[in-house]
Length: 135
Image 1 (cartoon, rainbow, N blue to C red):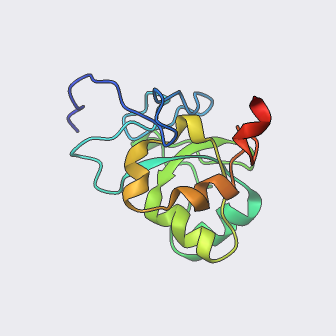
Image 2: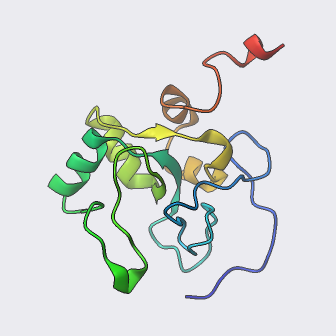
């Protein structure tokens, strides 16, 4: 897998993309960030805090995120872990009522090509529902 040229990637709020998680080390490039590039065909761009319901649904759909796969550098996830998930898989879980929490500041703007911002905001764990509360 070829990493993209270094550049500043943006989050869904328009700011600099923040790190998603290092315990376990997440991201398509396993650098803790939901960066993406031409080799990331699945668009691993949504930074989530996975829940038991989300993990169960993914397993039902054939996307087992709980079983370790060391050959891919994948430790297996537990509820509460932060993980960069495929945008279409997150949207699928959202539509099924089992979406995982979303860290907007660490969710890549490229996810908006697949997932509406309004859906991501409904499950945001890092900002208030109404940003005007910050003023």
